[in-house]
Image (cartoon, rainbow, N blue to C red; front, side, top):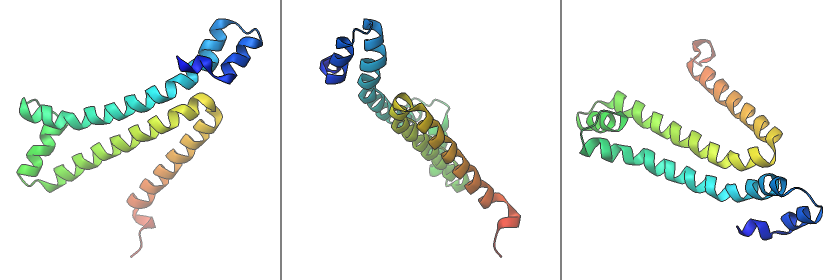
Length: 135
């Protein structure tokens, strides 16, 4: 791994830290950032590919339901499925982007997650609460 040749890892070795601490705490955390990014991208492709696989092999699932809803012009079902898939992709993308922060700064990542969930909950409440709607 090229991370083991970085300055901060060599400094940890020079401090006479245990080998397992240097590898797990310093090197592995920074080496996993590109891996998490690539795996997240592949999961998005895998999720999008389920539509094709379910349609070709006639498997029951969300992808086939979406295609059938589009073909039979069942717009509420199609819109719901597209929104579910889009929401899943956005959540997956946020998790992939926040994973390095969770490793490097757990407190900041947790704070950002709490703020994001609060914003999402407030937005849903504002959209669904009839008392908050303008006439």
